Image 1 (cartoon, one colour):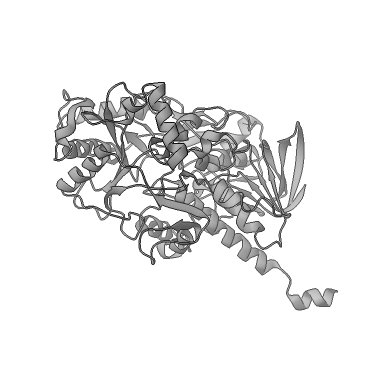
Image 2 (tube, helix red, strand yellow):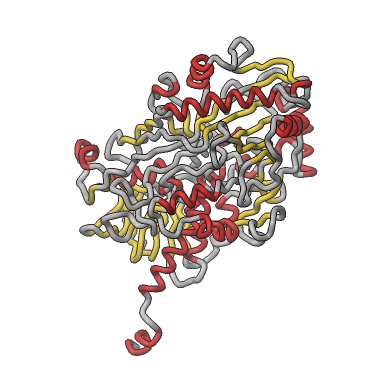
Length: 544
């Protein structure tokens, strides 16, 4: 149980680290996953997120505290509970974000994180057969593909958006994100390409890599201010694992800060009441929690949609047979088909809202589809100003933290989401979409466009997460930063964080691709440090 590097969490970033740190054969690496193996068949079928989200076998099933911003509701926050983490249960949507996101991180003092710095890492990670060569990677581990599923209602929505004045963009993952188009997916031959499939599976047979599942961390172990390893629960007992070089937390924006807090790193005023012995005070741990909140307008249509195409066993059987034979059809569909990155105000430099266009509709994600044909024009604010926080329930990792999202806490956030709903309506009134819409089901025709309070209250009652928690161990140089730009936890040694929790500001994107990039960046930083610490060949020879 002694390794050079111990990685906590085999999720989107953790699998990258497991591969890259073990690649040269010089270092002994362990990766610990609190969940299980990714053997559940629905994980690997693109549409399987309907079977994995909310399933206690594959989802940690977090739930927020009642939030005033959404009229006191508590909502579910799915998080992956298997190898691959949330990349094994997500909607398969591949989005890098705006170049300005990363330039903004750099402007906050995070040297090495500008767009020019991270773009080569995105390219290194991916294998994509579209786009321009200067923008896209061709031979990386992560397969990225254009969707092979088409739906008339989505095509009409894209044409209507163009008629409304928005331009088509064939590759929103290039240097310009703005426009409308079809989503790119993390799929390979019609199957999900999770971080585990892309990075961990090719590395699992290496003799210097140990993968441990059903191995939840209890706490980190310190000697003074140096993290020397951790205690974990494995095969029915508590074990102690030693890291000769570093422990890397890659357990996600909820678990990584919780591990630090129960281990004595955080705000002393919050930890001491739980009887936790302080190692080092960092008031920013668990703060700066950001997420994307989606409002979901629904429109009834005369066109056939998934809603009625799956309403009996015979139709379901035909869909299944089509997938088996061709790896196509509805079962090869990601969570959304159409995408748009748009501005709510002409004075903005970059888009501030994103649409997810889905050829189906439900009252709530994860529930049964409606019994009528309809589509959803989900809209979210890309860069919310509102930030929440986490609080411990106890000093025991088994007790989920309290999650306070603090949605819609600022006027900008409220105005942006309401204007996003209005833009959804304007597009729905354009040809060739309006001809196939029979009714606005939600929010409903009784609510006028200029009824700001009504639209906002509808959003508060109905909006939900789009599964992008970030920021709780933010990177930076200010007093509330948790990690430095090289991802080392401030004030201690031997401990880094490498997952979505390090984002100082949430990216204008779905967060899986940026989190994989963070794993690539972290591996470069860690290996560069290791090489600097290695004795020179002459010194080694002299020692012999």
